[in-house]
Image (cartoon, rainbow, N blue to C red):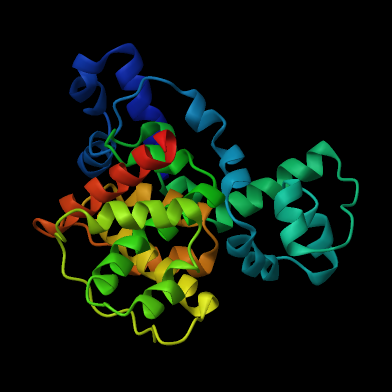
Length: 278
């Protein structure tokens, strides 16, 4: 039985007879029954499994691009044409070609397999935590979150700068909302020691500053996800492009980092509140 089958059986048990789960599973090999009961699913809704192939539409095209090599080159444009308009625009400038529903279903199924989506819990089955809503965010929102998370690192740097001209070089690179959030961070005690950003405040280099801040934010996001379900990490990183997603994934660990992880999660929740109410 593959992982998708295990998930479906676990949901069926939840739906129809959760108390009799172990009784029903006694007819299966012990290892298989254990795998099914280890599925960390509490939902009784079958729709996320039945329509799980639709999850391809949320994946950034950069994760799909290398998978095209699994198809003959002559089929690449046809495969691309079964994707969403946003994914198509990222992969080619050519207009999509007409694809029949049968061919579309076949190619989508192949992409589903190559992406190993069946190895991961659908978003709807993830354990509910304060960070699971991120799995429903768009790439734009996640990128913006990383930008603001990096402001915490910038605040640590700014605290040691007294030259007003140097500060102007930094402040002028921030949006109004980012500058407001920076001031908010500066008014609070620094809870985490941040390494130097490696910027030269004597020079105004907005491109470099924004890039460094953004990467620091991605690192914070990955560390905030430590201890969360690994499939939450998978969904979030695949909403992002593969470069950003890999940075986040490289910081993930199955276990929380004592004290640090909780602080980083609180920072995310603070940013969410700031963006929603600011």
